Length: 300
Length: 300
Image 1 (cartoon, rainbow over the protein chains, first blue to last red):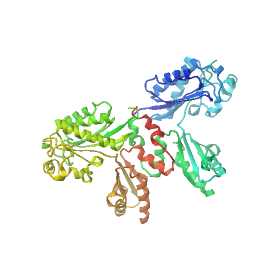
Image 2: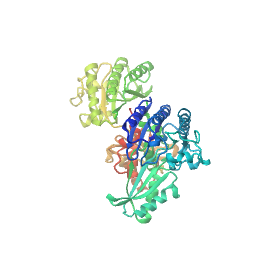
Image 3: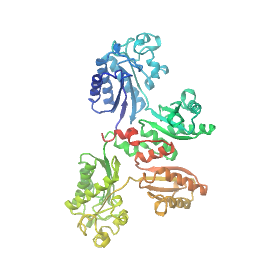
Image 4: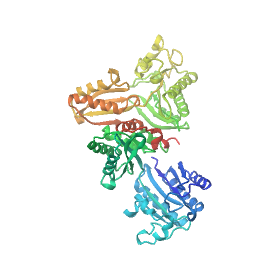
């Protein structure tokens, strides 16, 4: 049984290729860690790394990347379209195989502690690692951005979770936390009526009374002349894809509207789809971790 | 992209632990090959190895195991409940990742050729490697067993695919071939009427006009007092699980019978379930090999 964690650190540099190359070199240097993907965007002035590896390897890689970013990115001179508050801006840890959310939360706290102790960069814990509900959401934590942080840190309710009430002079402050993987799931309707997609999005999304782990918007797909419910499923175990799909089907009937098809954008864990197969095929007592061949081939 | 092949060689020894240990040692010795499982049965007097690895590694491991079996198993003294015709009785190769059936057929032929050239053991090619339809089925190929093979090999239609028309004196003859992975899929009905399960089994199985890659029987599950359609899905791409499931649901309605639940026995490739999720969730343009996270974590 191989424990695997995904880590997707975001850094506030998307223009200087030498800085990005330096981070890439560090990302590739840690045993037990595979660098999956690097994406950088000059207008956002930001780069995003996707790493997968053992908990120990990921813990070390996250720290070393943060150290490298501190040494090579100066936030006092950084500008870009994307909101940011630190050289390393955010470090999410995602349980990927044979590891619990609790273990990933503990891992995130060890990393935050070490970053403070050795680099003197403070951090907020967010998502599943958050100490209070108002720190769960990254946008709320980052509000004020790098320039506003010195002031924000002095507010009674915004002491950092690790470190003192002042930013690192050039590296700022970091959001660190564990979260479930996100599945981008879109449902296409056989109507060009945007309002129907918007009404359905409101029904299924957690923020307006729907499924807790579903974020949804109604949008137009102009080239196909159809409306779409576009969703981020932020915890496919708590809110399975098939349940939202069936709810959309049921609600769409009120308008005489049908589902044409759906899309999964980018990566998904196999489990998000296996859960749907289990439901529709009525599979009893299925232990996917033991019975799905591919799980046995990972990390050996 | 890592090419992976599964190989499940069967040997005619299930009693002498020293012989089994010798085979296990060989199975573990080849780089690039993981020994997944060893099962032996004294009454069958047979052992079954499950190996997964690179095509090159599997090719080498299959040959070396066959050589070891020739050196340590004497078919002139072998008895057991399970039909058999050789010390190495059958060697199936199963495409597992990023490899086509055609490549596995070619691999099976290279192994059969080398076994003849270096060990002087003849072989029949079966399943997808078979040269003619009457050699596809293992039971037909093995009919006559070890004792009847010298005579069978002289029949005009039963020349071996590799080697001469006579068995190896102590190792016999081997069935070698490529085949799709098998998924054991059972459907439980809310009736104790065995005849209904038998009628449905006849409808869905290929041999009586149903789905080509479905083998099915109706059986009683005495402890639950229900009838079951028990199936081997021998090619889940050609005959997907969901299609057979929906056909059983539709046919069962004729008797007012419903599906209570289903079972997958043992291992299944993730793809057999992902295909069902794609169908029921109507996912458009899904490329599982690229979009399912776990595939990227295998064999790196």
